[in-house]
Image 1 (cartoon, helix red, strand yellow):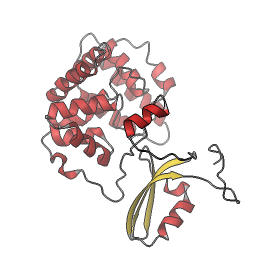
Image 2 (tube, rainbow, N blue to C red):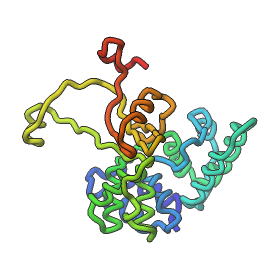
Image 3 (cartoon, rainbow, N blue to C red):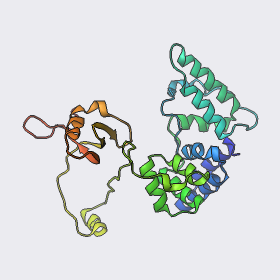
Image 4 (tube, rainbow, N blue to C red):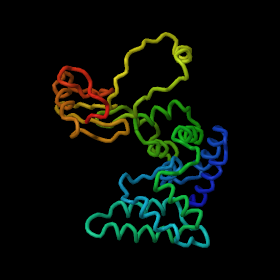
Length: 277
């Protein structure tokens, strides 16, 4: 069982390490120590995120905990933290803010001062440790002794690195379950930058150029009459783009996945400014 203190220590060592390979080695060592139930949680925390999509905890709430005394010794596990956050995420209705605050104070009271500081940065999305998703992905591949390309493909189809790590490190189903499927959005491939056109051509070889029109990157899935639209962050926004839904539903293909930019046009066919909603 990995304690929160173990993860915090690794995070601190990663932040103090400049070399990417050294960061990967530190992260992989911790990932190998995680128990099956901890893998998805630990992977999320190492990327600076939590598993709960809507926690309802912001700066004001966390700020009220800054003066709370820390525990004398470390006792929290990563599973303890996840369970507490899951309980907080389920709260709703009248008095929910006060109840979330009460539960958060209970979690804070169990953490040492160093753990409290880590949790504050984690909840606010401010964990600066030099371990972005790509570095943790490398660490998952190293811990599992798998080619990075295989883990990368699984990550793109799953849209979540924690579930991929669980599948291969927790002895679950392996990478076989991760394939492109309708209504399971895929992480988009994003353009990389180059300092000059000459550098870009050197890396690409033969290339074509075109004017870039700013739109919103979306992914559209169609199965029969059902159509769903997702953002580049894999959030569903079907209700926000009825024109796109109508156009895709009218296409002759029964099943398809489209990935591209959606652009709002004026009556004369020219594009609106990107800021126009």
